[in-house]
Image (cartoon, rainbow, N blue to C red; front, side, top):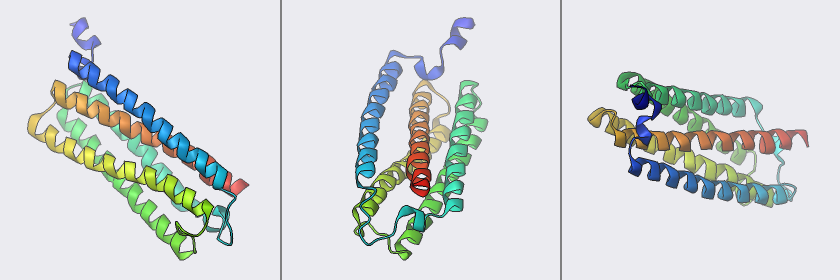
Length: 199
């Protein structure tokens, strides 16, 4: 009994272990991608030309709401994983659907944020700063959008097949991806938004 509970279902086969290891390597490449985008942003952040600075167009309340939605979605994704490891499909689906809606809420707020910036005269072509800013945030937003589609597909698979070694492995990998995006957002919030306002 103890040996069964000591190995999570998502690690129960050698193929699952290899797939999860492969995804960790993929996340390493994603770290390099975002590190490059952050480096480009830091180099270009002062190149505002005649366009607005972040401090002039930044709306703190909107970004705080985005941060709350995404970090809460990471928590509910963790709860869904916990339910999966206790073989509770209903609880897993409930928390996964909540995660999905929180992610959709984040994307809604971010799209509104981008629309606000455009109305304030900040577009991709306005300056080096806005180009780097929109590229960094847009890449993160595209990743979140992909994650939303991915989680939706997983919900469909879980409803049809239940919790199996294959669906548990897929869900665990998706949860790693989702948590990674939350970590990236913490860096964006801290080093782009807060730093941009305080500079």
